[in-house]
Amino acid sequence: MAFTLPDLPYAHDALAAGGMSKETLEFHHDKHHKAYVDKLNELVAGTEWEGKSVEDIVTGTYEKGAVAQSGIFNNASQHWNHSQFWEMMGPNPGAMPEKLEKAITDSFGSVDEFKKKFSEAGAGQFGSGWAWLVQNKDGSLEVTKTENGVNPLVNGQTALLGCDVWEHSYYIDFRNARPKYLENFLNKLVNWENVASRMA
Ligand code: FE
Image (cartoon, rainbow, N blue to C red):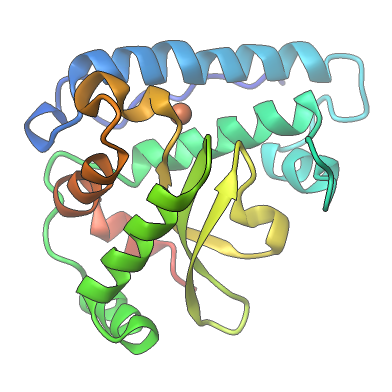
């Protein structure tokens, strides 16, 4: 079955008060994410990957250490990344669930220290990519960054939180100020209930 663009879990203007405009979501979800889905369907047609899950395609086509990944990998991973990203945000961020706060404090010393590390990872990613809070197989939490569409699935890690640091994610609302976009994301847009629900 062909891949389809998932609906946003909220209205296009639902995150505007939190600093992500309707215009950003119209471009980012309706155009950029849709383009990844369309291209992925085009590229897998007639190949061994047709009919496979997006996770299987991501882990099966990743070339460790390669200078550049294939078109199938890039479009599959970006489809997966964006599908998670929409779910990881919400119009009512709410408080951080206790088990998540405890795990973050255990791993980073404090929530503020975690936010600092995450922001540094996102701001320090040279060019396009993602900042992540991941859970390792041993249960420990870690902040990572990846280039382009690469994601924690390829390292066998669980993505708890991801932030898109491609320019298309922040240029309309924050222009070139990626650090401000990251700070706003962490303080006004993250759906912490969703992040906590991903923990093993
Ligand atoms: Fe994006």
